[in-house]
Length: 229
Image (cartoon, rainbow, N blue to C red; front, top):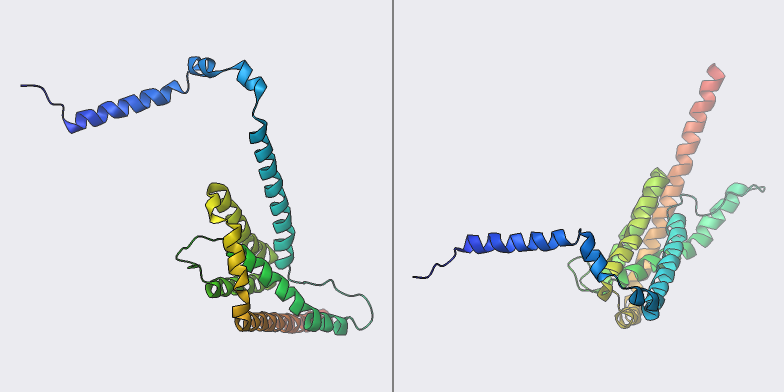
């Protein structure tokens, strides 16, 4: 009768071969045998050109996201006016100009989420779900900005750089054709977009009014303490 090796014996033998092959990668002889001066000097310009384009794209995307998330995470979207009637000027800025800022925030995060073109449980490929998630992220950023800007910055940059990481690992997540198709369906959700924008503006106004009340209360308490001293 022929000897039939056991399954465990074969498994241990294969594992030993894999470990031996892995150990060869750390030997100098393996590196020396694969070294080729001719191949090194010839180079592959097409590969270098593709890498150069990738580096430029990553750099430009990172710079754009850096400025975008830092602005979105600021508590004060507009600089304080030192002119007369500064309170009136500030009120007009948040009443008339902040709606445009809200549109900018909403479009920015919506486009980032639309770029995640693969069907998954979170987005489901539905524009309505994408818009809802974008609205939730913006409101969360604005609420945390009034608590501490450090936290709002972390929340604001989390999604954009996560998208960059997903793209680098699996570029199939990004498809220009699919993004254009999804953008073309946005007019169908115009009522939803307007509702979300109005809610974002209302939340910002409520937070702003709460901040002003908080400053007035604690400022009066501070004045009373100084007078007692």
